Image (cartoon, rainbow, N blue to C red):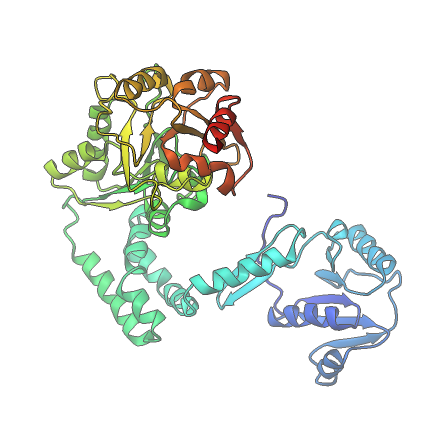
Amino acid sequence: MQHLPLHADLKNRPCLVVGGGPVAEKRVRQLLDAGARVTVLAPALSGGLAELAARAQVQYEPGTFDARSLDPYWLVVAATDDRAVNAQVAAAAEAVKRFCNVVDDPEHCTFLMPALIDFDPVTIAVGTAGQSPVVARWLKGLIETVVPARVGTLARLAGRWRERIRNAIPAIGERRRFWEDALTGDVADHAYAGREEHAEQALAAALERWRNADPKAARTGEAYLVGAGPGSPDLITVRGRQLLAHADVVLYDRLVNPAILSFARRDAELVCVGKTPHKPSITQVQLNRLLVQLVASGKRVCRLKGGDPMIFGRVGEELEALTQAGLPFQIVPGVSAVEGCAAYAGIPLTLRGVAHAILITTGHTRDHVSPDLAAYQPGQTLALYMGVERFASIVDQLLGNGHDPATPVAIVESGTLPEQRVIRATLGDLARVAAEHRVASPALLLVGETVRHAERYAWFNRNVLVAPPEIDAIKRKRQL
């Protein structure tokens, strides 16, 4: 983080804007919106600034900047079209320890003006450390389409009730939970619909229900079994991200991208429960027991799994444990590793006239033996999880089942991440090529004719490695 966002209270506080053009006018209006008392120093004013001065909304001082004292001002804006003058203003502000914004000159700024989304009293600021105002404006538009327009109404309601709720529910954790439950149900629905009186009544009813609840009754939590996606943090679903941000405890797998964990609450407990090959790890039985204990104690637990939790995520065992204990849960699907790796490698999983079905399997079973691949047939795409250590035995089995050693294969390593590699080879040469390129988990194996499109349709990066001379030989043979 290059800059610490601050929400400054400038109401009735004097601020100086040096410059009288359209850019200065924009800054003046932002300061006026914040309630500041603005002085404009410039040889001449734009039409808009002249009108503000005529209405006494700003104080106008004609002239150019000199070594005047900046002591009266809380902050200063330099918005002239002369870089030397702007630098002089910045230096003067620095000397007296006043924050200064120099328009379009981040190096001389001690504060930056972000793109603002104003849902009074909710204010959202988007900054890019001065690198790209265009990106900031784009994000501003994106946020405005997602955040309800009347979120300010909800915030004002919460503000009016804040002290009352604090007195009624002294415990911080319980109070937070009350607010989270209250503000995501009927209260919010009424506020967003403009029914403020109904929202007030719904909040009062929620507090009454809370007061009348049996304090000795054990509060039951809930489990959220969430798919984190195949790697890239922007591939988690909206619902998954919402529940992750709602959880008290996050039990996450080893392969979950650490960037996704930043979506959790700052005070949430983060516990890694991933299984590391050939190293001591929590057992599935222990994990099931921990999950049940946490939910039964009243915790909202996000069980965060890589990819989709329903595909090789052992979610069935965790669901069974929760069901036997009579505990509530939700399941949020995710973009699976198969879907993510294939899409980011440019490999269609099905293709008319080429592949009509997908066989998804794993490189080893519960007993750590190779799977039975007899079901895989020509005209299908084979997607194989967790097979890096068993490529040799997988090749032997497929060749023994009659598959052509020239069948194209692709290994997608670290799929959807910046370091993704797509290594193409043939079935017969898979084990050698994997060893040669030192393939490491996480990696997904794709087998079938659609793999031939990996080079042509690559879009995410061009790190597609072709293992010569086998691929070239196959191409020549087909051309003949």
